[in-house]
Amino acid sequence: MVENLLLKKMPNTYHIYLRGEVLFKDLDQNEFDLIWGRLYHSYYKDELSFESIVFDSSIMADASY
Image 1 (cartoon, rainbow, N blue to C red):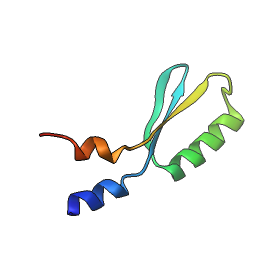
Image 2 (image 1 turned 90 degrees about the horizontal axis):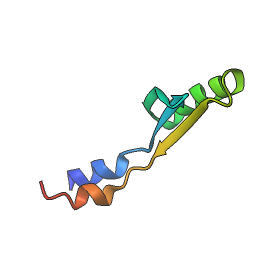
Image 3 (image 1 turned 90 degrees about the vertical axis):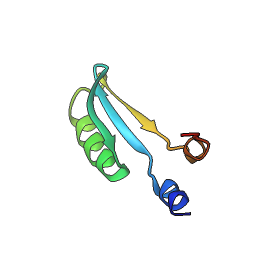
Image 4 (image 1 turned 45 degrees about the horizontal axis):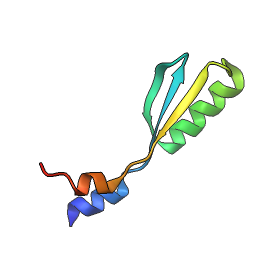
């Protein structure tokens, strides 16, 4: 039961890339909004990208180990 509660609370995470290289990783929503807003509006607009990692609790629930 405790495992299920912990799995449901896991937030999405974000990675920010500059020229394809990881600049920031495992950011929560607040960190991402702050950093992306400042970087994207100030520097390297064409060279910045991000990835949103959506946590899928069914993967953890079906793990056999």
